[in-house]
Length: 335
Image 1 (tube, helix red, strand yellow):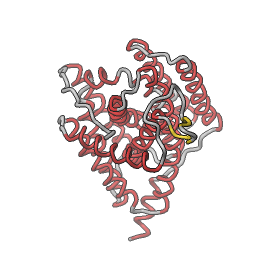
Image 2 (image 1 turned 30 degrees about the vertical axis):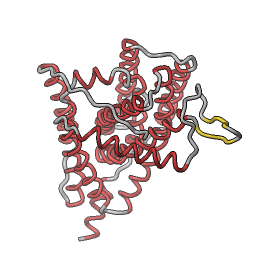
Image 3 (image 1 turned 135 degrees about the horizontal axis):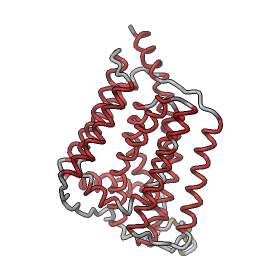
Image 4 (image 1 turned 180 degrees about the horizontal axis):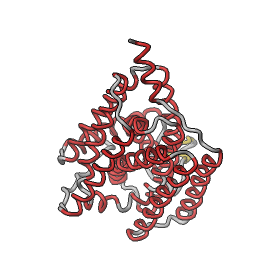
Protein backbone atom coordinates (compact mmCIF):
# COMPACT_ATOMS: atom_id res chain seq x y z
CA UNK A 1 0.00 0.00 0.00
CA UNK A 2 2.78 2.43 0.98
CA UNK A 3 4.85 1.59 -2.12
CA UNK A 4 1.79 2.09 -4.34
CA UNK A 5 1.16 5.43 -2.62
CA UNK A 6 4.76 6.53 -3.21
CA UNK A 7 4.76 5.44 -6.85
CA UNK A 8 1.54 7.35 -7.43
CA UNK A 9 3.11 10.56 -6.15
CA UNK A 10 6.42 10.12 -7.96
CA UNK A 11 4.62 9.41 -11.24
CA UNK A 12 2.89 12.77 -10.94
CA UNK A 13 6.28 14.51 -10.78
CA UNK A 14 7.32 14.43 -14.44
CA UNK A 15 10.02 16.17 -16.43
CA UNK A 16 9.93 17.22 -20.06
CA UNK A 17 12.84 17.11 -22.44
CA UNK A 18 13.69 20.80 -22.77
CA UNK A 19 16.12 21.97 -25.53
CA UNK A 20 18.99 24.15 -24.32
CA UNK A 21 17.82 27.17 -26.30
CA UNK A 22 14.59 27.28 -24.27
CA UNK A 23 16.66 27.96 -21.17
CA UNK A 24 18.52 30.60 -23.19
CA UNK A 25 15.20 32.29 -24.04
CA UNK A 26 14.33 32.52 -20.33
CA UNK A 27 17.73 34.05 -19.54
CA UNK A 28 17.34 36.46 -22.47
CA UNK A 29 13.92 37.54 -21.15
CA UNK A 30 15.44 38.28 -17.73
CA UNK A 31 18.28 40.30 -19.31
CA UNK A 32 15.83 42.34 -21.42
CA UNK A 33 13.67 42.99 -18.35
CA UNK A 34 16.71 44.12 -16.35
CA UNK A 35 17.81 46.51 -19.13
CA UNK A 36 14.32 48.00 -19.53
CA UNK A 37 13.86 48.60 -15.82
CA UNK A 38 17.41 49.92 -15.35
CA UNK A 39 16.69 52.48 -18.06
CA UNK A 40 13.43 53.59 -16.44
CA UNK A 41 14.69 53.80 -12.87
CA UNK A 42 18.04 55.52 -13.40
CA UNK A 43 16.32 58.92 -13.41
CA UNK A 44 13.56 58.12 -10.88
CA UNK A 45 11.01 58.23 -13.69
CA UNK A 46 7.49 58.30 -12.24
CA UNK A 47 5.36 56.00 -14.37
CA UNK A 48 1.92 57.33 -15.31
CA UNK A 49 -1.26 55.30 -15.70
CA UNK A 50 -1.32 55.08 -19.54
CA UNK A 51 2.36 54.19 -19.65
CA UNK A 52 1.85 51.53 -16.99
CA UNK A 53 -0.99 50.03 -19.04
CA UNK A 54 1.24 49.86 -22.14
CA UNK A 55 4.08 48.15 -20.25
CA UNK A 56 1.63 45.75 -18.59
CA UNK A 57 0.27 44.77 -22.01
CA UNK A 58 3.87 44.38 -23.28
CA UNK A 59 4.86 42.00 -20.47
CA UNK A 60 1.65 39.99 -20.77
CA UNK A 61 2.17 39.69 -24.55
CA UNK A 62 5.74 38.44 -24.10
CA UNK A 63 4.55 35.87 -21.57
CA UNK A 64 1.82 34.59 -23.88
CA UNK A 65 4.19 34.49 -26.89
CA UNK A 66 6.60 32.28 -24.93
CA UNK A 67 3.91 29.57 -24.99
CA UNK A 68 4.49 29.23 -28.76
CA UNK A 69 8.06 27.81 -28.56
CA UNK A 70 6.97 25.74 -25.54
CA UNK A 71 4.23 24.23 -27.74
CA UNK A 72 6.48 23.48 -30.73
CA UNK A 73 9.73 22.49 -29.01
CA UNK A 74 8.47 20.75 -25.87
CA UNK A 75 4.81 19.65 -26.17
CA UNK A 76 1.23 20.87 -26.37
CA UNK A 77 0.61 19.65 -22.81
CA UNK A 78 3.64 21.58 -21.57
CA UNK A 79 2.29 24.73 -23.26
CA UNK A 80 -1.07 24.26 -21.54
CA UNK A 81 0.62 23.74 -18.19
CA UNK A 82 2.80 26.82 -18.73
CA UNK A 83 -0.19 29.06 -19.52
CA UNK A 84 -2.17 27.74 -16.54
CA UNK A 85 0.77 28.13 -14.14
CA UNK A 86 1.49 31.63 -15.47
CA UNK A 87 -2.16 32.69 -15.08
CA UNK A 88 -2.32 31.35 -11.51
CA UNK A 89 0.93 33.07 -10.51
CA UNK A 90 -0.25 36.33 -12.09
CA UNK A 91 -3.60 36.16 -10.31
CA UNK A 92 -2.03 35.33 -6.95
CA UNK A 93 0.45 38.17 -7.41
CA UNK A 94 -2.41 40.69 -7.36
CA UNK A 95 -2.77 40.06 -3.63
CA UNK A 96 0.96 40.62 -3.27
CA UNK A 97 0.65 44.00 -5.03
CA UNK A 98 -2.18 44.95 -2.70
CA UNK A 99 0.01 44.27 0.35
CA UNK A 100 3.00 46.10 -1.16
CA UNK A 101 0.74 49.10 -1.75
CA UNK A 102 -0.26 49.06 1.92
CA UNK A 103 3.43 48.88 2.93
CA UNK A 104 4.38 51.80 0.68
CA UNK A 105 1.55 53.88 2.12
CA UNK A 106 2.49 52.99 5.70
CA UNK A 107 6.08 54.15 5.18
CA UNK A 108 5.19 57.15 2.99
CA UNK A 109 7.33 55.89 0.10
CA UNK A 110 7.59 58.57 -2.57
CA UNK A 111 6.26 57.83 -6.06
CA UNK A 112 9.75 58.34 -7.51
CA UNK A 113 11.12 55.43 -5.42
CA UNK A 114 8.24 52.97 -5.82
CA UNK A 115 9.30 51.41 -9.13
CA UNK A 116 12.93 51.14 -8.04
CA UNK A 117 11.94 49.37 -4.82
CA UNK A 118 9.50 47.13 -6.67
CA UNK A 119 12.28 46.00 -9.02
CA UNK A 120 14.51 45.06 -6.10
CA UNK A 121 11.61 43.07 -4.68
CA UNK A 122 10.90 41.37 -8.01
CA UNK A 123 14.58 40.45 -8.47
CA UNK A 124 14.60 38.82 -5.05
CA UNK A 125 11.32 37.03 -5.76
CA UNK A 126 12.71 35.55 -9.00
CA UNK A 127 15.68 34.12 -7.09
CA UNK A 128 13.61 32.81 -4.17
CA UNK A 129 11.03 31.24 -6.49
CA UNK A 130 13.78 29.12 -8.08
CA UNK A 131 14.88 27.90 -4.64
CA UNK A 132 11.31 27.17 -3.52
CA UNK A 133 10.31 25.40 -6.74
CA UNK A 134 13.38 23.15 -6.71
CA UNK A 135 12.90 22.43 -3.00
CA UNK A 136 9.19 21.73 -3.51
CA UNK A 137 9.84 19.29 -6.37
CA UNK A 138 12.50 17.50 -4.33
CA UNK A 139 10.10 17.17 -1.39
CA UNK A 140 7.39 15.78 -3.67
CA UNK A 141 9.84 13.16 -5.00
CA UNK A 142 11.19 12.12 -1.60
CA UNK A 143 8.14 12.26 0.65
CA UNK A 144 4.76 11.06 -0.58
CA UNK A 145 2.81 12.88 2.13
CA UNK A 146 4.05 16.32 0.99
CA UNK A 147 1.40 16.40 -1.75
CA UNK A 148 -1.31 16.25 0.91
CA UNK A 149 0.45 18.95 2.97
CA UNK A 150 0.61 21.20 -0.10
CA UNK A 151 -3.07 20.50 -0.71
CA UNK A 152 -3.99 21.53 2.83
CA UNK A 153 -1.93 24.73 2.47
CA UNK A 154 -3.85 25.55 -0.70
CA UNK A 155 -7.15 24.75 1.00
CA UNK A 156 -6.32 27.38 3.63
CA UNK A 157 -5.32 29.81 0.86
CA UNK A 158 -8.65 29.15 -0.90
CA UNK A 159 -10.53 29.99 2.29
CA UNK A 160 -8.56 33.23 2.71
CA UNK A 161 -9.25 34.14 -0.93
CA UNK A 162 -12.95 33.44 -0.34
CA UNK A 163 -12.97 35.76 2.68
CA UNK A 164 -11.21 38.45 0.68
CA UNK A 165 -13.71 38.09 -2.16
CA UNK A 166 -16.50 38.65 0.35
CA UNK A 167 -14.81 41.88 1.39
CA UNK A 168 -13.80 40.72 4.85
CA UNK A 169 -12.45 43.53 7.03
CA UNK A 170 -9.98 41.08 8.58
CA UNK A 171 -7.65 41.22 5.58
CA UNK A 172 -6.00 44.58 6.36
CA UNK A 173 -5.79 43.65 10.05
CA UNK A 174 -4.03 40.35 9.27
CA UNK A 175 -1.58 42.13 6.96
CA UNK A 176 -0.92 44.77 9.61
CA UNK A 177 -0.28 42.19 12.36
CA UNK A 178 2.00 40.05 10.15
CA UNK A 179 4.04 42.96 8.80
CA UNK A 180 4.36 44.51 12.26
CA UNK A 181 5.91 41.26 13.48
CA UNK A 182 8.26 41.12 10.48
CA UNK A 183 9.23 44.77 10.95
CA UNK A 184 10.06 44.17 14.62
CA UNK A 185 12.30 41.25 13.63
CA UNK A 186 14.08 43.35 10.99
CA UNK A 187 14.68 46.32 13.30
CA UNK A 188 15.74 44.05 16.16
CA UNK A 189 18.35 42.18 14.12
CA UNK A 190 19.55 45.01 11.86
CA UNK A 191 20.40 48.65 12.60
CA UNK A 192 17.87 50.74 10.63
CA UNK A 193 18.05 54.48 10.00
CA UNK A 194 14.47 55.84 10.25
CA UNK A 195 14.66 57.90 7.04
CA UNK A 196 15.10 57.52 3.29
CA UNK A 197 18.50 58.74 2.05
CA UNK A 198 18.12 59.10 -1.71
CA UNK A 199 18.86 55.76 -3.40
CA UNK A 200 21.30 54.64 -0.72
CA UNK A 201 20.90 51.25 0.94
CA UNK A 202 23.23 52.05 3.83
CA UNK A 203 24.33 55.21 5.60
CA UNK A 204 26.97 55.98 8.22
CA UNK A 205 25.58 57.74 11.32
CA UNK A 206 27.98 58.70 14.13
CA UNK A 207 30.51 56.21 12.81
CA UNK A 208 27.96 53.36 12.71
CA UNK A 209 26.90 51.76 9.42
CA UNK A 210 23.10 51.41 9.21
CA UNK A 211 20.49 50.32 6.68
CA UNK A 212 18.43 53.14 5.24
CA UNK A 213 14.65 52.97 5.52
CA UNK A 214 14.56 52.11 1.80
CA UNK A 215 16.70 48.99 2.32
CA UNK A 216 14.69 47.90 5.36
CA UNK A 217 11.36 48.28 3.54
CA UNK A 218 12.74 46.24 0.60
CA UNK A 219 13.67 43.48 3.07
CA UNK A 220 10.12 43.65 4.48
CA UNK A 221 8.72 43.29 0.94
CA UNK A 222 10.98 40.26 0.32
CA UNK A 223 9.87 38.58 3.55
CA UNK A 224 6.24 39.28 2.69
CA UNK A 225 6.78 37.68 -0.73
CA UNK A 226 8.29 34.60 0.92
CA UNK A 227 5.04 34.21 2.87
CA UNK A 228 3.03 34.54 -0.36
CA UNK A 229 5.29 31.94 -2.02
CA UNK A 230 4.04 29.37 0.50
CA UNK A 231 0.71 29.54 -1.36
CA UNK A 232 1.81 30.26 -4.93
CA UNK A 233 4.60 27.66 -5.33
CA UNK A 234 2.43 24.64 -4.36
CA UNK A 235 -0.29 25.97 -6.69
CA UNK A 236 2.14 26.18 -9.61
CA UNK A 237 3.64 22.75 -8.86
CA UNK A 238 0.15 21.26 -8.77
CA UNK A 239 -0.40 22.49 -12.32
CA UNK A 240 3.04 21.49 -13.62
CA UNK A 241 5.51 19.39 -11.62
CA UNK A 242 8.21 20.13 -14.20
CA UNK A 243 10.96 22.48 -13.01
CA UNK A 244 11.34 24.31 -16.33
CA UNK A 245 7.62 24.92 -16.85
CA UNK A 246 7.07 25.86 -13.20
CA UNK A 247 9.97 28.30 -13.06
CA UNK A 248 9.54 29.83 -16.53
CA UNK A 249 5.88 30.56 -15.71
CA UNK A 250 7.09 32.52 -12.67
CA UNK A 251 9.85 34.26 -14.63
CA UNK A 252 7.32 35.59 -17.15
CA UNK A 253 4.68 36.43 -14.53
CA UNK A 254 6.80 38.38 -12.02
CA UNK A 255 8.63 41.07 -14.10
CA UNK A 256 5.40 42.69 -15.29
CA UNK A 257 4.31 43.33 -11.70
CA UNK A 258 6.39 46.53 -11.60
CA UNK A 259 4.11 48.11 -14.20
CA UNK A 260 0.95 46.32 -13.08
CA UNK A 261 1.36 47.82 -9.59
CA UNK A 262 0.45 51.25 -10.97
CA UNK A 263 -2.76 50.02 -12.61
CA UNK A 264 -3.69 47.45 -9.94
CA UNK A 265 -6.53 49.47 -8.33
CA UNK A 266 -8.25 49.82 -11.71
CA UNK A 267 -7.69 46.15 -12.58
CA UNK A 268 -8.99 44.98 -9.19
CA UNK A 269 -12.10 47.12 -9.60
CA UNK A 270 -12.80 46.27 -13.24
CA UNK A 271 -12.27 42.52 -12.77
CA UNK A 272 -13.78 42.22 -9.29
CA UNK A 273 -14.98 38.63 -9.86
CA UNK A 274 -11.39 37.44 -10.30
CA UNK A 275 -11.12 37.18 -6.49
CA UNK A 276 -13.97 34.66 -6.47
CA UNK A 277 -12.41 32.72 -9.35
CA UNK A 278 -9.09 32.60 -7.50
CA UNK A 279 -10.79 31.06 -4.48
CA UNK A 280 -12.34 28.39 -6.70
CA UNK A 281 -9.05 27.72 -8.52
CA UNK A 282 -7.15 27.24 -5.27
CA UNK A 283 -9.89 24.94 -3.95
CA UNK A 284 -9.76 22.87 -7.17
CA UNK A 285 -5.96 22.58 -7.08
CA UNK A 286 -6.12 21.68 -3.39
CA UNK A 287 -8.51 18.83 -4.22
CA UNK A 288 -6.15 17.63 -6.98
CA UNK A 289 -3.10 17.56 -4.71
CA UNK A 290 -4.89 15.73 -1.90
CA UNK A 291 -6.62 13.28 -4.24
CA UNK A 292 -3.56 12.35 -6.39
CA UNK A 293 -1.73 10.30 -3.73
CA UNK A 294 -4.98 8.48 -3.01
CA UNK A 295 -5.13 7.27 -6.61
CA UNK A 296 -7.71 9.78 -7.85
CA UNK A 297 -6.16 11.39 -10.93
CA UNK A 298 -7.73 14.18 -12.95
CA UNK A 299 -6.94 14.38 -16.65
CA UNK A 300 -4.75 17.42 -17.42
CA UNK A 301 -7.17 18.51 -20.14
CA UNK A 302 -10.08 18.56 -17.68
CA UNK A 303 -7.98 20.40 -15.12
CA UNK A 304 -6.94 23.11 -17.60
CA UNK A 305 -10.54 23.42 -18.79
CA UNK A 306 -11.70 24.04 -15.20
CA UNK A 307 -9.04 26.72 -14.69
CA UNK A 308 -9.86 28.41 -18.02
CA UNK A 309 -13.60 28.34 -17.25
CA UNK A 310 -13.14 29.92 -13.82
CA UNK A 311 -10.78 32.63 -15.07
CA UNK A 312 -12.69 33.34 -18.27
CA UNK A 313 -16.03 33.25 -16.48
CA UNK A 314 -14.84 35.73 -13.86
CA UNK A 315 -13.74 38.16 -16.58
CA UNK A 316 -17.09 37.90 -18.38
CA UNK A 317 -19.04 38.34 -15.14
CA UNK A 318 -16.92 41.36 -14.18
CA UNK A 319 -17.48 43.06 -17.52
CA UNK A 320 -21.21 42.29 -17.67
CA UNK A 321 -21.98 43.25 -14.08
CA UNK A 322 -19.54 46.00 -13.05
CA UNK A 323 -19.22 46.66 -9.35
CA UNK A 324 -17.51 49.28 -7.22
CA UNK A 325 -15.22 47.81 -4.56
CA UNK A 326 -15.00 49.18 -1.04
CA UNK A 327 -11.92 51.25 -0.25
CA UNK A 328 -9.23 49.54 1.82
CA UNK A 329 -8.15 51.07 5.10
CA UNK A 330 -4.48 52.07 5.55
CA UNK A 331 -2.30 50.03 7.89
CA UNK A 332 0.28 51.15 10.44
CA UNK A 333 3.41 48.99 10.60
CA UNK A 334 5.78 51.25 12.52
CA UNK A 335 4.93 51.88 16.16
